Image (cartoon, rainbow, N blue to C red):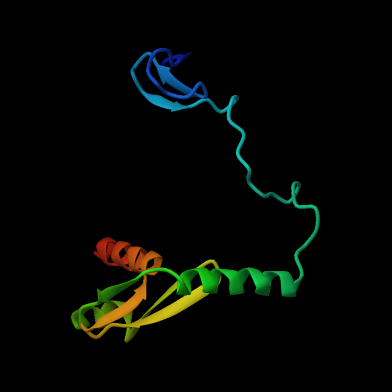
Length: 119
């Protein structure tokens, strides 16, 4: 394994490193990620706080641009009559009927990825 050397004159931020093989990545020692763990959580969230987070997410998704999505009816044998998509506690059901349906843009991206990943 190649020894990482600090990236110089590459325009990369200082926390990025490049190995002798030319592989660029993040220097784990110089990068701090803000990830909640059981040790970093100060207290449990109440049900009302969690419900408020879901309501905020719903409002954000409602305000998003709507995109037309059609899921071919021939996929009903793999997906069922409707495709359930959930993001951050907010979910939608999209009929698998070949017709166009308006969904928030972020849900459309997930649906397209789901369809792409079907084998």
